[in-house]
Length: 160
Image (tube, rainbow, N blue to C red; front, side, top):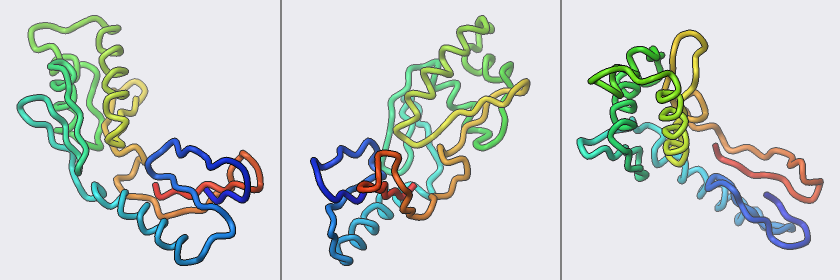
């Protein structure tokens, strides 16, 4: 975000930064490079789930409860591809299939747990779910300067 006057904004995403105008060109380049480095840390990484239910991606990790770890393992086996609801239910509950609501609740909780890793579980209507990077491509988007809806004095500077 480029800020001309007023209180400094509070970035809501680790891929945001701000700088007060007028900004020195070198300062702006350094901040953009810092944003790029934040995204490059896990750009080529594949999520890894260990035996203790800890999912790691780059230098980030999240601990998962047993059912969610089993669901994640099934999604990771087909990372970026659709996993049917039936297969997911059998993976999460090997002793018997839960009700439809139980799977939906666990997927919702899992979506929230995976968000800090920049992973997303997408619903594919009538087919199942797929696990992918939150940007949908596995690639990190280039740095962009986008106008902010907050007004002409502030522009959002993102790297992802």
